[in-house]
Amino acid sequence: MRVGLGLAALGRPGYINLQRDSHLTSRTVEGMQQQANKVIDALFQQSRSLSKEEKLIPWLDCARSYGLSEKFVGEFLRSNNVSPTDVYVSSKWGYTYVADWNVELGEGEPHEVKDHSLENFLKQVQETSEHIGEYVKLYQVHSATFDSGILTNTTVHEALSKCREEKGWKIGLSVSGPSQDDLIREAMQIKVSGEQRLFDSVQCTYNILEQRPHDALIEAHESGMDIIIKEGLANGRTLSNPTLKELSSTLNCQPDQLALAAILAQPFQPRVLSGSVTVDQLRSNLGSFYSIEDPESMSVAERLVSTAEGKEVLQKLMESCKMESEEYWDNRSALKWN
Image (cartoon, rainbow, N blue to C red; front, side, top):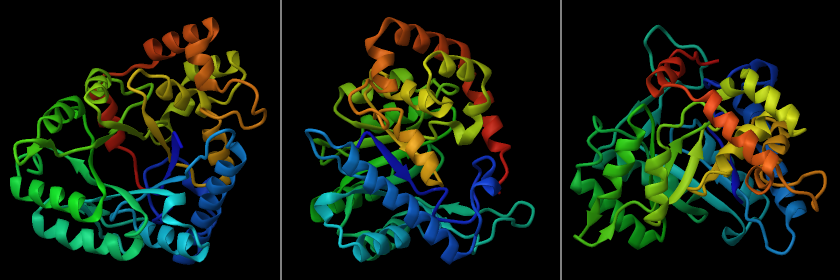
């Protein structure tokens, strides 16, 4: 599926998405797992109902630091007897969840701790294997930065390459921050044994507000990398944008659908993650690329690239909403876990 479900907001009780209290009735482990099961089940149901000529494979994206996301996904898939060929699971290593299932922590205490060392990779790849190993198709470095040393650590590069060879998993990385474009270009140059490129994919923040990585994503796509977009709604911040509201009314669609469709319409041909925590949110998000109500009609993304009105809306939306990258990430850093 071109639109998948990210478990960042469903695998743990706290996250930075806006207005979580209005969507989550229980933050216990049992309550969060039940909610995750509902949304995952809805993704599978939608994949079946949307299938026309080709089979749609549901896509779930986890991380070691997304609380119990891997546990939730693994237990759902096994209890429903889902074959590894009937689901696409991606996950990440590099952060450790340390909030002990709390939403509010003491001043300065982190919810997750980054460690891109070889020792942590070997530890976390084993943990991932235990929870969802038979289902994983893609394993990603979580939030690669220049400071974390992952881009120059050849020992870790060799271990990642060995993981791909032995487990058959694709290897990717996710990036964050105002230097995403530089990180992508640097990652594209990394090779193992002097020949094969290390990273098969990149997961990047890109949306109507944060557009700086655009050119680097085109370069990565043209080089053959799989492009995955996270935080397409900017943790909910895009939904209050007046231009987005106005133009979604023009196209007679929901604001979240237009915001995600604007990403899907980009020339770097991305896959996009939904951060939904309810079935209704997921259904609406899927409407960005799929015609939920009328399978014979054009989706919002199709209209943006195929009709004169859609092309005009897309151009106005991207030009009007674009922020300076530094401001975007400063604002994101100020979001509180809730």
